[in-house]
Image 1 (spheres, rainbow, N blue to C red):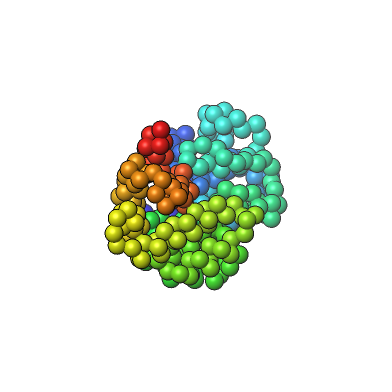
Image 2 (image 1 turned 90 degrees about the horizontal axis):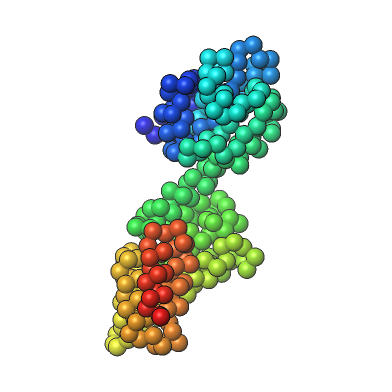
Length: 274
């Protein structure tokens, strides 16, 4: 069942809380409304939360807990008064508020915990780009047209263009200012772009080994690229003004430390150097 097919509003109790809230929160944000039928502020807040959840199109779910019938949950989550609203993500409470807030404040509160459609779309495109950059090129171009000042979109699109050896990558990446949080990654992608472009011009010796590593990267085999560059670091450390090591470091920065290959590759590089 996709997020958009999930019910927007559910009633939960102590018996199904683990499944309906804790487990589900690993897939989508679950906002829990602790309420009671006799509570006046609850009757004011409830319809606002329900309307927002219905209009969220699966971006988050609303779970309603009647505290009169589920006192164990109230104690477990230290509910001192109602209404009490707690947002669960990855099995834990990440945000909360108490009382009947105005709708505008609730919307602001939700914006801190629920990814925007733009962010969700970019995340999916970034994931696809790891193994098939060509497939997301036009979607990223459209997203950048819609959000021309979003550096997160620029860095993703620029990285895709680098992988495709598209000269337009230079323009996109250089448009990211030095004040941006994406600046270091943009510079790293430019180093990789330069390596890829230079690889076209050589065919012999160490230059060809480096060129092969760059061609491997364009082909989408990041693991093999790292291995080839590590070999160059070990055997040709000072070639090209330490080009293999600098390119590896640029690759780590471009991919990000959360990429599954990067932590071990950093350790391998340290061993190759020392």
